[in-house]
Length: 155
Length: 422
Image 1 (tube, rainbow over the protein chains, first blue to last red):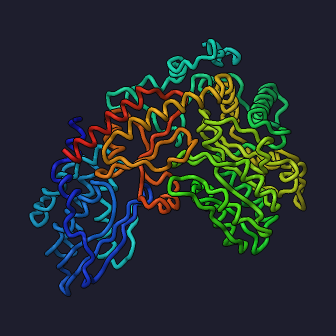
Image 2 (tube, rainbow over the protein chains, first blue to last red):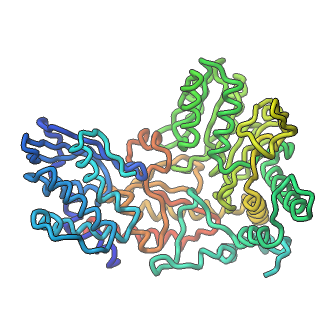
Image 3 (cartoon, rainbow over the protein chains, first blue to last red):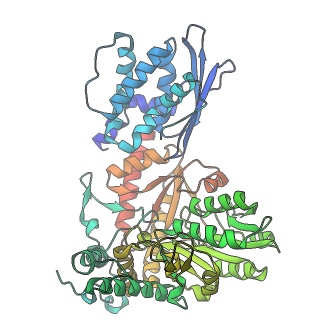
C-alpha cells in the first residue's frame, strides 16, 4: 500500500466513511441546504436545528458520495452540535484554510481548536486539488443553511 | 528533426502485424512517469494522447508555415491556406464525404452540434415537431436540443436502452412518426462503449422523413465511419479524441442541407461582400467558419488522420478488442465489481463500480499507482439515472494500451480492496 494513500485515507476517515454518523433526516430541523458538486455529481442535504440563541442543537445529513465527502459530513455533524453560528463559521473558515494551504492558522482560537484538531485527518486533501471540494462540500452546505439559502454550490 | 511531413508518418506495419510497442514509442508522453510510476493512460474516451507525427506537424506549422488563411497574397498565407484546405480534404476522405464543401471545421463536437441546433433547427423546425435522442447521450447531445425545444416549442423524445446498455431499435422505431423531424444520436456511447446500430437508425428515421445527426466522437477512433454508406445527414466528431489537437472539431453535413442553412456565427472569413446596409455570405464551407479558424489544429488533425489511417482503423479496432476482452476477464474476477454496459459488440470502454468504494476514491488510489481512469457521471447524468448509479469508474482503451496496462489497473484496484475491506 502506497504511504500517501494511507495518509489521505486515515482510519478515522475510513470509519466515518463506512459508518457515517447522523445519516438521517430529523423531523424538527429548522433549516436545511443542499450541497452539490457539479464536477463529480456528489449530492448531500444538511439538516440543522438551530435554537433561538443561534446555537446548533442538532445536525444531520443525507447523501451519497466518496469516502472523503461522507467522512467530512459525518464529522461535521458531530463537531458543530452545541456551537454558535459564529463558531461554526470560524471552524469552517479555518478548516477550509487547512485543506487548501500549508500556512499556519492566524491567531490561536481556544473555542475552535479542539474541533480543528479532529478535522486535521482531512487535511491530506491538500495534496489532491480535485478532492478539496469533497472535504468541504458539507461545510459549504452548512454555511448555506445558516445563511437561509437552500443550496450551496462549491463552484 | 526531419521536417519533411512525408517522413513523419509511421510506415505501414510489417506483415500487417500490430506492433503495439512500436506504436507506444510514437507517443512521447507514454514514456513519462506519474507519482513515480510509469504512466498507464486509460482515459482515452475523454481525450487521447498525441503521436510524435501530430506534435511535430503542429510545431512545423508554427516554426515554418504559419500565417492567417484565405486572405493574404503573401507566400506564408498561401502556404497556410493550402495546408488548412489539405486538412479538410483529409477529413473528407476519412469520412468518405462527397465534397469538401460538406466538411466544416469547428472548435469541437459540442460546437458542431450547437451549430446544427441553432442554424438548421431554428430555420427548419416548427412548434410541435419532434426530436429523438437516446438515453445514452452525452450532455453535448442533450442540452442543445433541450434549449431548442424550449425556444421553439418542440417535443424531445428519448429512445430507451436495456439494463445492459443495449440500444432498443424496435422501441426507437416506435417513437418515430410524421412529426419526427430530427434524430440526434450517439454512434458509440462514451460512458458504456455500446455501439449503436446507426445504419438501421438512419433507415428508420429516413423512412418517416426525419434527418439524422450522428455524434461520432467515440466511433471515429474505433470504427471505420463512412458517411455515404451510413447515409446520415450530419455527423460530428472532435480532433482530440482521434489523437489530434484539442480545439478542432468537425461537422459533416449533406451539401444540400448546409447550403440551405443560415450562418451560425457571423464576422470575417464567412462573407462575400459587406456594406453597412447588407452582407452577402460566402459559399460552403467558409460560410460556417466565421473568424480566424484553428489553423495549426486543423493541420494537426490532418496529421492524426494520416497516422491512424496508416495503421488502419480495422487493425486498431482488433487490437483494442483484445485489450477490452482481457480487461473484462480480469476485472470480472474481482469480488464486488459490477460492470455497467455489457451490450454485445461494445467497444473500448469498461465502466464499473466496486460495492465497497466510491469511484472517486478508486480513481484517486489507482492514480497514485500511475493509472489514469475517469470517475463520475461521464457527462451523461441521465444515463446514470437510468442505470440507477451515481457514478462509475471508467477505463477506456486506446490504440497504444496493452495487457500490461490492464494488469496495472487490476493491481491498483487491489490496493482499493485492501484499504476499504482490509
